[in-house]
Amino acid sequence: MNPVDAGPLALARVWADAAYRWALVPEDALRDQPTAEWIATTALDVPTTDREELDSHIQAVMSELEAHSAQRALTPGGASWLHVQHVPVRRLVGQLVRKLLALSAWEPFARNPGCIIPAAGEALIGARETSSREYRLYTVTWSGVAYLLGAPVAGDPMRSAQLRQLTASPVDASTAPSPSPSTLPQSEVVALSWSSRHAETLLPVLEELARDGHRGVLVDLATDAADRCPEPTTSSTRLCPALPSLLSPTGTIPGPATTDEGPGGYGKTIRVRELAVWLDRLERLAASVVETSGGSTQPSWRAVLRTETWLDGVFTSTRPHTVLLCNDTSPLGALAVHAAERHGITTFYVQHGAWTPQSVAWPTLHSRHIVVMGERDVTPARAWARHPDAEIHVLGQPRFDALGGLDQEQQRCYLDELLAARVDRCPEKIAVWACQPFGPDLLRAQGSLVLEGLRKAEGDWGLIIAPHPAQTAGSFGLFLERASRLPVAAADPGVGAHGCLAGADAVLSAYSTCGIEAVLLNIPVLELAHPGGRTLGLADHGLAQRCSSADDIANALSTPPQSQGSRRATDAVCHWHGTSARDIARLVVDRSRTGPA
Image (cartoon, rainbow, N blue to C red; front, side, top):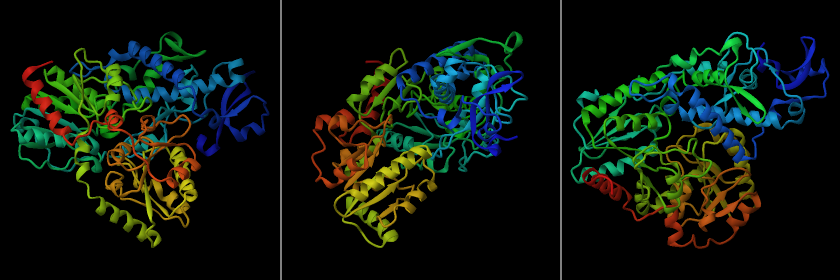
């Protein structure tokens, strides 16, 4: 039986094997076996509000798992599987801990805890819905929770049918010719990109280096067509797309996948509140997640091994003094920094997005030099830096250097054309909603808030929905339908908020860096805040209006725009003088000649 076919599941205390036991059963089945002690699993899936306790347990579980399992599988270069794959495994552990805290908080189970009988036919690992093209979000099912708490499971139903289908789906790799690493010219700098935001951040730096005669190679590891790097404009910078097959293979991690669970199937455990999680079983589930390839954002273990060999070839051929990258925490970034340092290459991390306490899956930075946008980023950078000689530099964001040259009138015409094509008129004022790739529930809640605020606002307002670069194109059809007679349209995903915000009268954002861009252009920003959610914290600096309700949005849109705050407040968020790329390039050259300050 497939639980999906049987309907929603419930956790119930039922009579089984001559005793009352906890079991995952279809809700409909409770009609035939009445019990007062049951709860729908959807009710248990409500997010915890105690973020501090959640993070504490996640860290404790990850620490135990690393001590227990990290050395079971290493790359040829000596990087452990849990060092490279820490982020996807940590996300999985986060989902597990959320469920365990909810289970522990349910009074009937807390009063009488025990083994849980899994649902017949339910896989142990499933996929969560998301509007992001980039990330494959896994979760531990409730049967997976039962398994991790010690329940026997018939067969080995690790992954859901949905995940097996994803496993079979080919990775959208670049079709551009891929030069052999051995043919690459000797270069002073190698930059690594697998996201459009990485490319937009790093290319200006490489171009500045090229103007001063410093050769560079831009390695394009993107597996999504929308994230591939454009051809550099200077001949001194060579584009090197990765092999199409580099990140596509799947395969089991030998050590964790074959772990014995000890005598009688019982192994070491770690407690989350009063619940004991079996580490050997958690290791197996984590290994099954990184067995499949999710492209550049979550490569399989076999893809990691292949990529390390390929990067070794790139570094051996080019012999750079510096590696530049915008992410040194996720699998490719952690692997690249580890490989670069084995070759004696200095590593530079250039912050490409704003940091918030909840935005970083693993608050760890591995690079030697950390370039941050504003003064407020120095404190977290110091706390997250793991390199023993780490240096932190406040130099802004190269992507923002070109903001001063945006054509405001041209962007306004684009907004007018979008609305005129949809509602046959151009409103007097236009707000741009800079979206994020939220899960469906949060996206719907935030969209409803924005539309209701727009309806209540005084004046003639229209709305442009601007998808995030990582967002699927079909995420906003529902909002356009619900907008009714409101002047609402969606920007092309290739344009996004970055390509149209200069023409707006206001920008709405939760934590898109487009909110920072709007501040730099002196466009009013409405910071969308939902309970337990994150924002960029611009309102804390007096640079935005915090809006947690439709009335807040309506009032903010109805009030004449005020000053966005002082230059000091703006510099705290982003040091912006239009010279960030040049300043970073100079720092790279300076450190290659002088070493540490």
